[in-house]
Image (cartoon, rainbow, N blue to C red; front, side):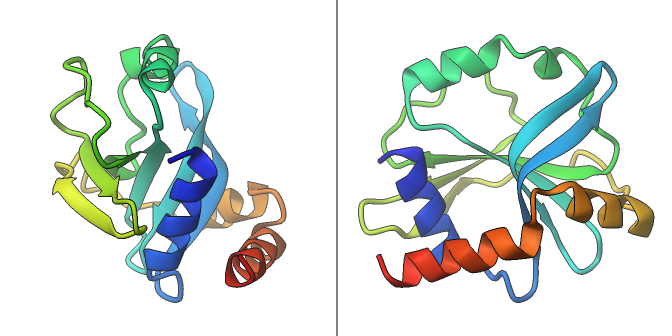
Length: 151
């Protein structure tokens, strides 16, 4: 599966009428900003960073990012890797991270639950900033969902 197929399956299986899903979200770490594939925020303002991985090369490219050598932002409750079924998880992945798998028919299954990183919530002001920084958040998802319906 490629990242587009994973994204499509994830969108079809999510509860997006309840949770807010922000694509390509810019998250502030201590050393600067990093991009998350998705940031999911619940109505209770708990945040989960979701990182899509599709290959071994993808894992290795990710390993060199400086964000892994820094503490995660305090507002992140969970961190999850979203991968196709059968992709090996490297040994260096933190046991704090959850692993969600997508099978050949597009069903998302939890292989490993993420551990709670922080009890802090996203502040309403931060939630507003994150949503508005997302590149045309509502238009993006409207167009994306419309394309998925016709796929």
